[in-house]
Image (tube, rainbow, N blue to C red; front, top):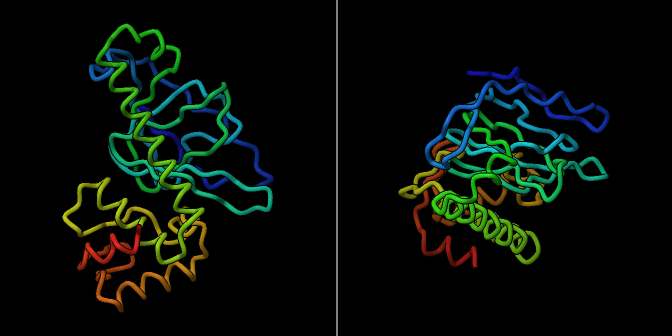
Amino acid sequence: MLTPNPAVELSQTQMPPAPPVFPQPRDEGDFHTSSVPLNFARNSEIFAEGESAGYVYKIVSGVVRVSKLLPDGRRQISAFHLPGDMFGFEVDDVHHVSAEAIGPVKVLAYKWQSLLSNTSSSGFVHELLNRTMIGLRQTQDHLLLLGRKNALERLAAFLIEMVRRTGSDRSLQLAMPRHDIADYLGLTLETVSRMFAELKDAGIIKLESARQVSVLDMQKLEAMAT
């Protein structure tokens, strides 16, 4: 199993690293096609903006952040991908975003052309379309969150999203640090910290630690998020 070396986040002046060298694929029954298992260390880069987009990825374990560096140097995180999610899809042959492992991550890498050649399998087509539509819905929800909600509503919506996607019983162990949450919500780190404190003071959440959050009043949190 290949384990790429950890990579630091790209700066505006750094060139993207060379794409990983993939070992020989193995059969992966879920998709009736070949896949390559890969491990990535914390904060290592899976692919960089501008790299060739020959592969798509399915997360086995861990959390991946997808981001884009804006012209003014700020980073916008567009998605957090959790186990079972697929990512890396592009409309052309170049990645227009970067993907990094937040913590240790295991993925299965699929050559895009191999996926296309297996569309004769109805089970494969159903699985691929289902995951693509879930990703599209999450993107639409995120655009609505950025465009129409205030800071408190954004954080409430984010916590609801994490509860639903992780299947949590209202106790969340967040994989991402607060500065990642801020870049995802289009807020400053200070604002995110202040909104966490506001939800805590209102008795809606309990902060066990910086990343462990218990939702005490789901009804009020959902009302804030809508």
